[in-house]
Length: 368
Image 1 (spheres, helix red, strand yellow):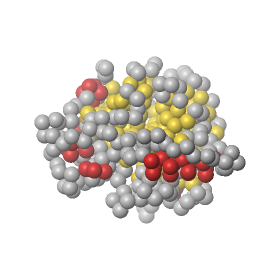
Image 2 (cartoon, one colour):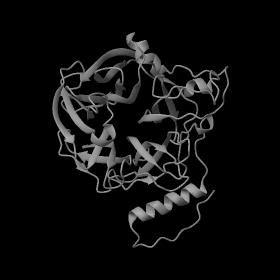
Image 3 (cartoon, helix red, strand yellow):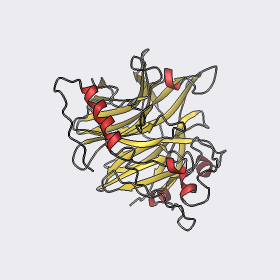
Image 4 (cartoon, one colour):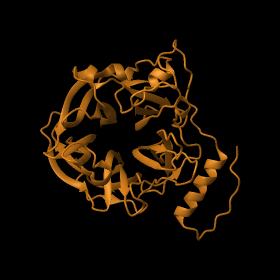
């Protein structure tokens, strides 16, 4: 289907142009989510070779008293030192991470190796006006790129959106894009991201362009999480929503999906997702679409592969639960990130709700 030609005044603001294009795309295209939704007990969701390569590491980065540490976005610098960016949240009512949407900051740790010890060297993203949460770190040429969830209260109260910042050094200074928030809830009724755009992951695609995959939510009564894409020719943006979003959706199964970590490796696009509502069980016929399931990330993760980063197909398992790795009580494992070394995946990091630490890491073995 072709998009109708629309004349846009050259003096029109960029934000208004984006809004018009998003609305046009939403009204012109059906959802692109061409995932394999075949439900068949004879087609179980298999353990991927990535899943089979993982071995347990340990829990790291305990929070200071009165605070919650959440997630880990790891990267090595040019000298081989390990840097980790993560969310730090002051307790609400004496416990928990209830303040995450209004008071979260992004802090920066450094260590000589994954074994630590870890030194807190700064809090590069903290503001009375903006909440910074769930960072993901990459490097493009000589530039470090950090994407994150941001709640810019000057835009809309409690509106989860996506921001991006760049730096020549992991020690900063960091420069936020003038287009921040670069991806906002569209507020277009019926669109896939009418109410929500958050938890971004950034990559450089096969053509050298920049992609941000993110979690989106509509304004439907049962607003389920889906995965969407925005692209740009420049790191700092502006980013344009893909016309066939959402790319991964299980709304027809009354299930949702979130916490994407996408990467381009060996000429293939990959995405690791948190299976918070047992998509694996639904697709393999173990549970029915209408059956209740506890949300919140207690299940294993999923691994998707794609040749174009648009059609993702049927997943395999990507990682197991903390209970299976560490012989402990089951709790939520979320926010997957990979630590890369010499262009190869070395460790998988996961946030964890059931620990005093920010989360844990798993060693990635001989994965092909």
